[in-house]
Structures are given as C-alpha cells and as structure tokens.
Amino acid sequence: MDGRKRELIKRGDTVDIVLKKDQRTGKLTRGVVQDILTNSREHPHGIKVRLEDGQVGRVKSILKD
Image (cartoon, rainbow, N blue to C red; front, side):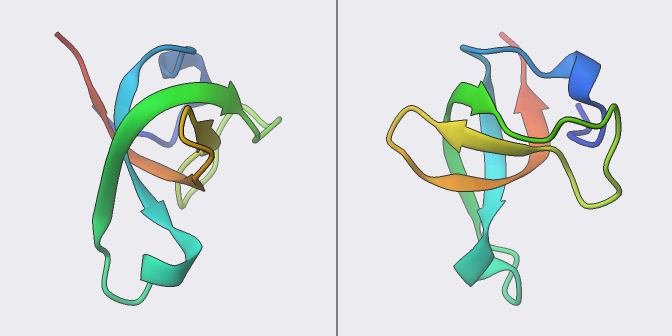
C-alpha cells in the first residue's frame, strides 16, 4: 500500500521507508513504525515515521500481513 496517507499507517505496521541519506538512490529500509512524525493527512513524498530502531524516513510502502 501507498505511504502518502497518514490514516493508512499505524504504530506497529511493517513499512519500507527511504532514509534522508538514501533519497538519491531510493534505497529502501524495512522496519516497524514506532512514531508517526508527519501531522498532515497526506504528504506527496510519503508520511515521515520513526522506526523502532530509531531510524527516520518517509514511508514508500506499507506491508500488510
């Protein structure tokens, strides 16, 4: 699922994010959402989240079980 709508992302979801340092390459990092950092309902580049391991990036896809 797409990571541009805040309502689709919940704490505990497994997501693929792009870290700031990886924006040029588009390399994805997988992790579990700890906090949702973007306050707006939508963001064109993806909702910004903090993963449980402390990494911060924008959600590119949400992995549903």
